[in-house]
Image 1: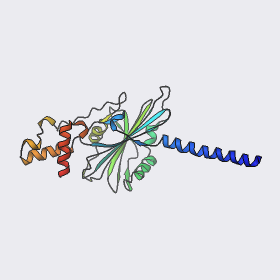
Image 2: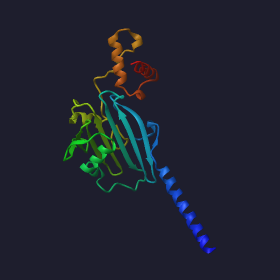
Image 3: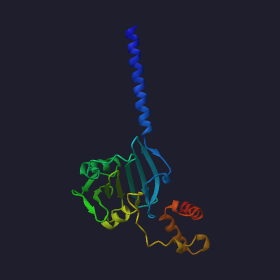
Image 4: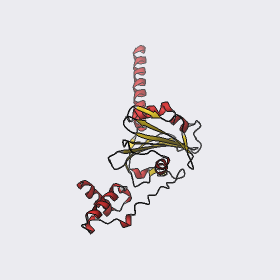
Length: 244
C-alpha cells in the first residue's frame, strides 16, 4: 500500500511538472499582436510592416517585426528583433551584438530563414558611422543582404535584410536608410525621410482620367505604409492595388 501511494505521488508530481512546463512554454510563446502595441516600429514608406509578434517573459520582452516591399518583385524582406529588460535593475553583461554577427551565427540565421546556400560572407564586421552599430553583408545563391546589430545597457536589437534582386547594390547608403528607419523610444529615433515622394502632390485617380496620374498614384500606394495614411486614401490605395 505504501509503495502504491509512493508511486501514485510520484506520478502526480510528474504530471504536475509536465503541465507546468507546458503552460510555461505557452505563456512565453511568440504571439501575434497589433503592431501599434509595440515599442518598436519601422518608419519607412518604401516598405510595409505586415506582421508583429511578441514573446513576454518574467523580466524581459521580445518584439519581432516582419517587413517587405509590399510583396514586390524583385523581393525585399526585413526582420527586426528587439529584446529589452522590464526590470530597471537588470542589464546585458555579455557582448550580444558581437555574438550575433559571428559568422557561425550568421550561417545559422541564413539557414533558418531558408535564404539559400552561403556563397560569400564578410569575415569582419563594419561599423556604421554615427550609429554605434556594426553590420556584415552576405550573398547566397538566392540573393544577398546584410545583418546589423546594436546593444545598449538594457536593450538589444538586430535587423536583417534580404533581396533576390541580383542588381541591387548593398552599399552603406542603403544600410543607413533602412537602419535609420528603426524607432524605439529612448533607444533610437527614426530619422529616415524619402524626399522623392511628396504626398500632397500625388493626385487621386478619381480626380483625373490621365493615365500618368493614375500610375503616379499607384506608385504612391506601393511605396506607402497604408497604416500611416488617412482612412479615405488608404481605402483608395487598397482598391487600386486590388485591381492590378
